[in-house]
Image (cartoon, rainbow, N blue to C red; front, side):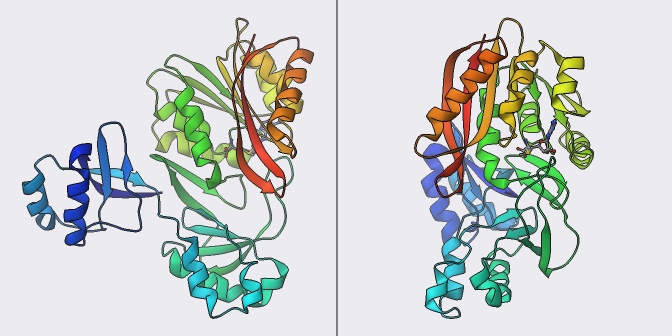
Length: 354
Ligand SMILES: C[S@@+](CC[C@H](N)C(=O)[O-])C[C@H]1O[C@@H](n2cnc3c(N)ncnc32)[C@H](O)[C@@H]1O
């Protein structure tokens, strides 16, 4: 996400505004045009002046300049273009098709057969994504209680601490010390969108706060208890709560989710978020303890395999809820969140518990 001044126009004027901005080369074509129910937000080139926009503002009348978080236009093809005549054709297929950009840091997976071409690949990433300052290579799987992976610097400069923006929220984090995945951006927002005013939410595995903060930022009257066992995640979570100005809505707690819930949060939650896919099943009892006696909603994440990942995830959740002495009254939604290996997905089941 890039924070930039955008031209906000009513939907009916959007097409004309885009055309005019393009004619004057004032639109940033590297950022996506966004919309809500009423307006369209058109990203402007960095440093565009009021004078340059004057004629458009006059012609359309109802244009407002507003700061906005614009997603970047994905252009994986550009990397392929850049490398197509520099790599042996048989290796092009194993190019890292996906890499993560977190703030100004890129985290890339270089398969063994591409090792000799690593610097070329890094050059391609840095050319296509101009904001990237540091490129790190994955040097192991996400592992351990804190769900972090070993990373090795392969290009660029500076440390592993960065600032990432996601749907209007700002996250300070250290990619080497805490878990963070920009691929969960939609999921963070989806869950935040389901929360109703007045709810109490327990985010059991909060990391640096992308669920908790998005929820708190998008609602007036919510209380979110954000728990994590990793002191580094809690350090950044506290910074992020302050930076996003949600101190009055988010309570940050360092500790094991089960202990914290048993000691402080039994029966308080309208909603529990369980984003620890490797282990969530073991913590369903704790989520059930957090949920109010008259019921609530659990967002249960796990890694599930083909042939029927969603069906098997739901079955496991239902059984664990029953073992905890409660009952799934309704499955509200289930979806594949992302593919994590061939035939294996991170999935989510949203279930109403009684
Ligand atoms: C997959 S990450 C998810 C982080 C965050 N929800 C997000 O979307 O970025 C899981 C987090 O759970 C934390 N964690 C692992 N075991 C825990 C436990 N028993 N109690 C509380 N947090 C735990 C890890 O430190 C890690 O930050």
